[in-house]
Amino acid sequence: MLAIILFPAITFAQQVESTNKNTYFSNSLFLTLLVLILFLLIIIVGLSQVLKNISSGDYLSNKMMANKKEDPNTNTKLGSLVFLMFLGHQASAANIENGDWTVGGLDMSTFYFMLGVIGLELVVIIAMYFTFRNLLGSAKDLEALKGKVKSKTILEKINASIDIEEEKDILLDHDYDGIKELDNDLPPWWKYGFYVTIIIAVIYMINFHVSGTGDLQIAEYNKEVAKAKLEVAEYMKTAANNVDETNIKQLEGADVEEGKNLFVVNCAACHGKDGQGSVGPNLVDNYWLHGGSLVDVFKSIKYGWIDKGMKAWKDDFSPMQIAQISSFIRTIVGTNPTGAKAPQGDLYQEGEVPITDSVIVANDSMVVKKDTLK
Image (cartoon, rainbow, N blue to C red):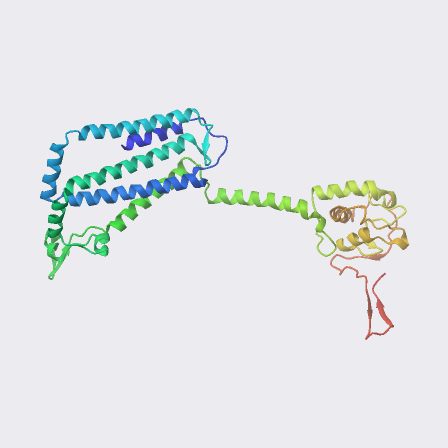
């Protein structure tokens, strides 16, 4: 049975490699079918254990032999079951050839193969049900059996507890100062739970370490970082115009290059192509008329200085473009190009507080103590 179940999976693995790297374990339909398969498998294993315990008695053993004699077609039924399993395999193989069809994101071969496994498990469970009926016999036989068997609580059943009257059957020869040891089995819930962890471990190993369809932590981290960078870039495209003098930051790379192009086209007439100065002051030394910080430069471009011939560019450039030009101007400070105009204004040193557009007055007085505008 295991070979028949695995054969379609081997055939499916020999298909042409998929162009995408999506793993089955990211598909909700696949996970649902897989959980159902494992759940039915646990039921089959549990029923098999119960069936084994029931059939261990002499009465039921004789009953089973009698049923076998009365039903000579057992092998025929088994052969029919195997034939149905092969039909499921052939349907799966046929669907592999037409793998363009998908159901819930799964290719048809995988979908029908998993349905076939679920159907097979249901057939096995139904067969075990009829086996129970054959072993227990008629209602009269069942009543007679109930009178001989002591009923157990649910807790005793899930722990496979042994009645104290039957402990002599599992008593070992070990005797330590009058303390004797019993050969108790592990509780079924613990044992089958352990089997489930083995199945999960095998699936995990195949998914992450054999087929490579799953990403290990470092690969998953790198993908998340790359995804986050794309999201940030996409956000910046829509949030670029939210830049102003309160949150401007020095830009780099392509933004500075774009700032240079804007400067050459729109600002070179007054400040020179390299910022050496012409009608307006040079922008390459540390002397500034209205402050030399990035914020000061941004404000000068945005609002202008009308009384000194500097227009406000806020209606011509977007906030992001003004930030690009400002960042470019900050990169040419100290370059000392040929023909640089003489310094104008006050010396600016990095770290100084940007100039504010306000005056400080005392106690509602009209007497100006200090004018911070220069």
